[in-house]
Length: 96
Image (cartoon, rainbow, N blue to C red; front, top):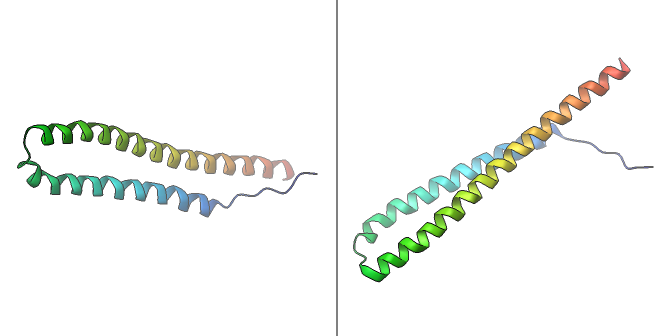
């Protein structure tokens, strides 16, 4: 026979909140780093500046994808939690 399976809703909620929080922290940190770099970047010239902007374009795309993945994972956790709750409520009605 199969093993018992259970869900802890508070753990799912904490996981969802953690992913949202860490995503916000990441965005804030990247914005802060970008702001700090602007002063120095103004002094860069020619190839160094061009190389930075080429790399930055790739970095920005990767950071955007990462933020999207974290957001989607957070949403998946919320959806799973909601689905488990609905299933539990439906199953409870069977025995009522």
